[in-house]
Image (cartoon, rainbow, N blue to C red; front, side, top):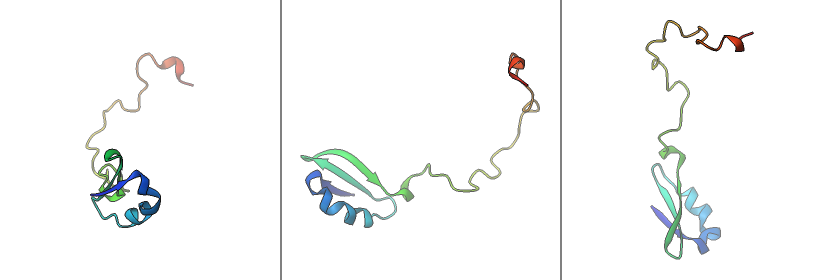
Length: 76
């Protein structure tokens, strides 16, 4: 992890971001107190990729496309 003091951000942030590798992070501090954390996108586990849900839907309820009870008045 890279630690950068807030007063040095303008000079070194671009350099630090360019040096980020997979699973790296930058900790921004103000008076040695952490205030923000920057992580590389590749380290974000929730980032969806095309086709990542393929074969995940195993079954769909038989009444999936029926109007739920009580919603008839909203149908055209």
